[in-house]
Length: 231
Image (tube, rainbow, N blue to C red; front, side, top):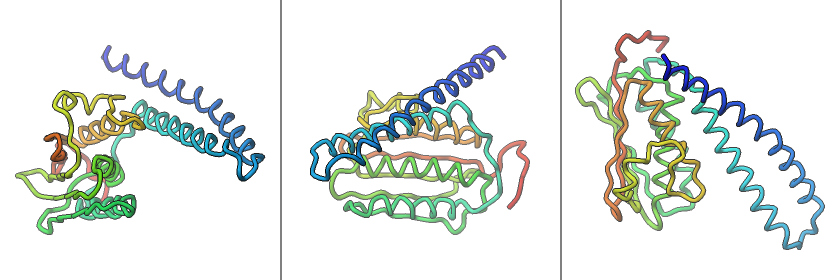
């Protein structure tokens, strides 16, 4: 109980802090837009304004992920087709990779039964993994998403041919705020892990530096003691 109260207090603090930062950030953003509007078209300062916009967007992303982590929403569990959930996510990821020589392969499983899951939250998990894979690939590469059944679980595997993850980083990648990317928030994988665990599932990773990484999301076909909301 004391741990639950501690986490609740941290959540309230994080929420308050996020709102306190967002208010002045909105003011800064407004001032930047006014400055940008008044700058001559050929002013070199326009490049600086562009950088400031990107930094403001980055801070907003961090705050959004922080709020999602501090105020987790219980999954809206419904019995539905996991193939469809993943397929929609892959379609969106392919749009993100249009300008890159990256092949994204989806291997659906027609024999997989419907799975109890929150399609919106699992979409968020898989999209995070796919975007990470896209960023990990420099030059031509391939990402393979495969669905399968293992006993009473559905498994979604996301494997890429990217740069891989250093062995010393593997134990930390699901920790909040840990990131190896200069523009990363370090909250995406932490949030993905929490979502999967709230589905009574498990997320794991293996990697070889220079050859790529493979994330495995395992979800029970039926959650123990779950209440089916719809289909």
